[in-house]
Picture 1 (cartoon, rainbow, N blue to C red):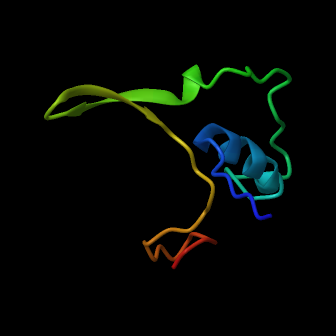
Picture 2: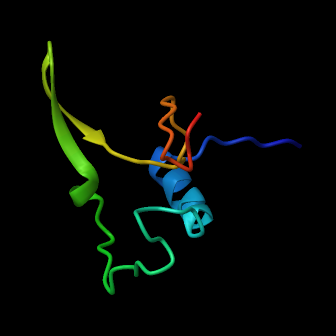
Length: 78
């Protein structure tokens, strides 16, 4: 018997969130430290955008350092 289920989007983000621990971020990623406390709530990551149908909450996530720009100074350039 094959059972397939589609995980909730928040569960997906939680599962792949630990994979980005070693992603370079910021100007000096080796010197930067994690915050001592990180809230379990995603309220800090939710912003409200204006749409033709009214305001809409959007969860901001960045799971890659890929970029379409080709800046000469950037290590992640296309």
